[in-house]
Image (cartoon, rainbow, N blue to C red; front, side, top):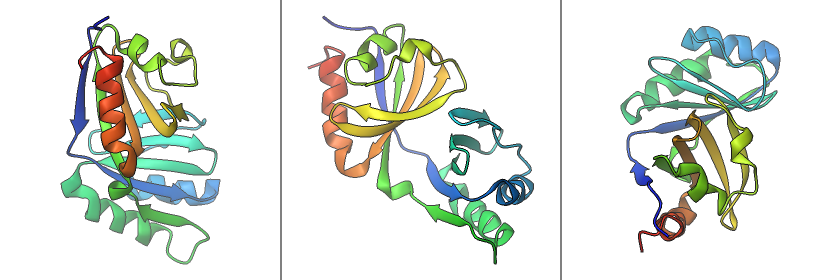
Length: 167
């Protein structure tokens, strides 16, 4: 069966992994002039960055690749001397855009989570097609962005194409 879904690699993104306490989070927010999501598994989309809250003390900041160094510098300076971590992880991940009316049907074949329960603006991590993945729900039901470890990038691309009936 062929699904109505388009799969594309995300080429222009940067990921910065953040760890720290709520006090450190306030410094991150100030540095970026963005309010971070207050609960885990939610995403805050701003004009220059997207912040994914993965746990109470763990966030990803997504930005464009040409802003990576500037955003990293701001965040690092904001928490200098604090018990915190700011790490560029862009090269560690491969991103995919999964869009279309059958996006959930295609993703559900490999995700260990019930995607129907996730709404727009949420994010989560879970098992995906025998590897791990981070999922951002851009628009529930039709638009998702999926990140797998880079070493699984080709495998995930082939898996997604097969799941969508494109092979």
